[in-house]
Image (tube, rainbow, N blue to C red; front, side, top):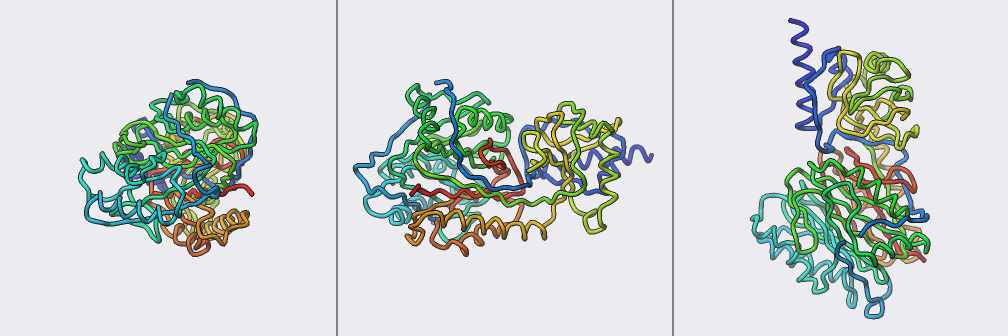
Length: 467
């Protein structure tokens, strides 16, 4: 009877992690015992995938490699507009989608200023206010209203930030005028590099040699398994790139210029003479010693420091203060095998041989491993430091007093702290901020490194023209 109860609890914990991305607490991990829960084939990163560590990165151009060829490309004509960068954001809850889009485009156009046209735009729609037929035309309508067809990505999301606030029912729009830059959009259905035309790849390949930056905004649907691999390959092809974005709910509409996409990933690439600093506010605190992953199979951690993983983790959990023992537990794996920062995953179940199954992630033997607990009090303090870093990033430009000379985007966990956007606006009132609440976030954790799929974080990117 006890065996059946333990197994049932382990299965329940696994099912909960799959459905709602809830993590195990130390006590529930112990109760899972040595009984393996039903095998999981996690198809996407959920809210239970966490990341912790340094969390702030800056652009760092290096040599790029060439890749393969297809997509849509547009170049800003700097001679026909003002030369300075400008950013703007807007929100609307108008009862019809067309009216909401019109209000947002008009407000954003005023924010960018006369003589400036949008280089790129991000469009987010949330709630059940608008019918599917109208949503299918949202990207096309937005670009037509701008009159300049900016490179556009976006999605139906759980909520979004724009204008002076945030909404879970309505539309937000963020745009930038970045004269002298080049924009490219693509859709990916696998981890292979996007098929761009030869000229585009040549320009992207030489951009690193010229000391330029490639800013990438990536949105992927929850069923797309190859997000991390795609991010790695993009960074290998363009080491001067910085990718930020998010994973949206499965089946959610994503916008790509005039089209809608429901599967895979969509992205914009903006190449030019500008900088992007990224800052990540984390929700999980590292606890216990850093260990080495000595044996793994698929998404199961079998041995740490050459001993069965489960007993070793239980020993670590038992040593924690009582206040920490009740917190949800996650397993952090060092980025690229380092001893931090860590990308964390839900612990889904434990195996009969002492292994620990984690939410989908490519496990690499030799990687550093450390337990983490989701600690709201710690996360609030950590977020204050991240906002301070955002302020320092924005102040690197002399024209910060100009209302919209620096811009920012944010991708935040829908189930985590929702105060980060308002904290940012309070500290940087002249810097437009727009973004979305998503299932999982995308951002780099190591300076100059590839981005990772995160969760229970807020990933903020600061865009600014170089002096």
